[in-house]
Amino acid sequence: MITPIIREYFKGLKEQDELDVVIPDLLTSMGFEVVRRPKSGNRQYGADVIAVGTDTDGERKLFVFSIKRGDLTRQEWAGGEQALRQSLDEIKDVILNNRAPEHEGLKVVICITLGGIVPEAIEPLVNGYMRSNRTKTLGYQVWTGDTLTRKILDGALREELFSGELRTLLRKAAATADDPERSIAHFERLVDAVAGGDADPVEKVRILYLALWILFVWGRDASNFEAPYLASEIATLRAWDLLHGRIEGDRGRRLDASHSFHQVVTLHLRIWDELYGTKVLPHAGKLHVLSFAVGSVDGLDINLSMFETVGRVAMGGLWRLWMEPGQGAVPKTSDLACWPARNIAEALGRMPVANPTLFSPFADHQSTDLALALLLLCSVRETRDAARRWVRGAAQRIIFAYRHHGRYPANDGSYSFLLRHPEAATDEYRQAAMAASVTLPLLAMVAYLLDDAETVASINEFQKTDARDCSFQAWVPNNRTDGKIWTGDPWQGSSVTGLKVGDGGSELVAALQTESKANPDYPMLSAIRLEHWPILLLACRQLRLPVPPQLWMTLMKEMKPAAAGASAVGSDPTGECGAAPD
Image (cartoon, rainbow, N blue to C red; front, top):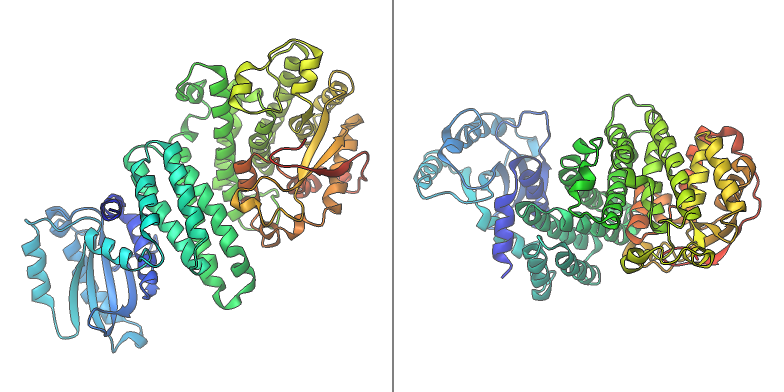
């Protein structure tokens, strides 16, 4: 049964920014017109949400909702200025006497809305209040967690939209929230089934949004945010796939589609805040603390987990960067003095010094997490020194590891291979294990942007000598990317092979600039065309695809304006690729 899962979900919601956010969405799915949503900083006078809709008697009425989390206690009923009884009085005295003209003729229903129940000891007090204040034009209703559950199952999750099979998948995903691997397997099947259904795209996204909320609350109760976080990435990408055409093309419904997508992104970032903003960032600069929290003494486990953390933390900062005024189709420098992206970037910049394993990627696909981190650090002027330190340290360690048969970034990123890597201290093994590299040209490019000529020279010398058989590569979208990348298909895009660093890095930068200008498919990506570039970065992180060089171009013009007119040398942008360049 799905009912207990949803009932517990409502009971677990906090009052502010959770229950009062979900209620308006529930009302919208029921056909209500929401005319007032909660606004932080404004006095509500007891009314958290106001909506116009049809009551059970078929009459159109004005509904005013006063919301409390969990079960109602005596203190919450009549224990001070924030008590529910005080809120109900303020609704009568203030809200109803200041109604909009178009609502003057409507009867009013004041809804006492709870995530839990009204306990038996409190019920006579509530019922007595409602009987004493009821009039011909003013009525009262109590919406408990059971009421909300019933309305969701009759509305947003009604049988024709949310079949028994889907309800079972949601129940399993929520019930196994403390086992992320199993939970995500159920959630992915749920997402695929919802996306492949016959409902309107906006309705599909509302279902995914509600399912994600339920999984988040259950994960929070289990003190395990891993499954909700991974699910939020999947839901965000699939929501974009379902809605970007509506956002762009259907002007009549654009606000509905944009609002639905914004809700999913907001919930994704709320989950990020719970996991990384609260639990990780405060410890970012503490020596070995995050590495120790991995819970393993094996160096490989710590390395893989720390780079995964870096990629996720960086994405949180890049989303905040995108939300700042002045950001367009690509990341660029912001000069705001104090903003969330800067705070995240500063914490991220402290992580490699406190956790030195972050200077040593063991797999080439970790270049994606590294690129996300460096992109954020370079977008904030105050953290460019941290980026420079990271690039120099990583380049030095990779070159040293390769020359001394240590753990350099291998092309095979599977756990079983990395456990054995390096298997042999021979030139033949090294050439096979690192036949190509995305990590090294990334480091060379960023070192060039940061005026670190010494690091550029060391990578250039390494490419000409020890790594002369290693193909330096990048990845760019092609004409199949937009239809596949948002749904988790890695088999799209093209590799840019044969990149050369060159003296001073100018040859590499010129090649990447020319490829960026010549590629007709990148600007046609929906996420770029509609200026939602974090979606592309999120997809790259999910699929372990390298970050396209185009996303660096505006920063390159800002940081190295003299390089803006460089011409291409020695690139071969023809190779088809999948999850990583060949």
